[in-house]
Length: 253
Ligand code: ADP
Image (cartoon, rainbow, N blue to C red; front, side):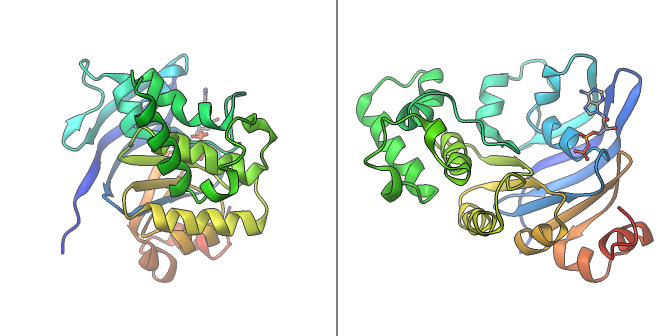
């Protein structure tokens, strides 16, 4: 069975001023799969992730060349609606960043931004989103409490639920477990497995074991280049490029 590409990246280069952070990247993201991006610090993983929903546009001096096709349409086209793009391709960050609002308002915020006013719809989405990240039972009696009072893991789950509320297709995760302890990390990894039934996930991680555990595909970045991309099993057991082998066997990085 050949899997559908939800995103196709073609000849993508990203510059910060005169510095080239990504060099001619070509790679396809498969729908309903988890793709992990690994590589040493500063090699361009986050820059690549941010390119996928044009978050680099928010960085002064950043400029992109090439194409990112989301279901066949180039997101760099001038007619792209950025609010809609970032709804379809949402991002979860290293440090959970709930709004200083109630748990309920955190979830419904994005829906309101997108114009939803129907109370029944908002409540249904609140329930479904918290349920999807296994927080409903835990928090259903605390919905009006400030989200900043939650634990780090609960906050990260809430941030994922906040994205799911607006029904994204792709969820980008930039080291989503780096502020969590190993048990919380394991539970978030379990959650990722559940989510891939309905979503496509792209995760940046500096933790190679995590990439090996959670992902279906892995890309190895080095100094702005995509050195190797393939099925995770292949990358970790029989890498084709000696630079990938050096990295995964711990000789480098
Ligand atoms: P990684 O996620 O792999 O650690 P990044 O994508 O954050 O790598 O960074 C890639 C390169 O781009 C690094 O050399 C970094 O210093 C540079 N860079 C990242 N963000 C900016 C920025 N806002 N302005 C200038 N250079 C940046």
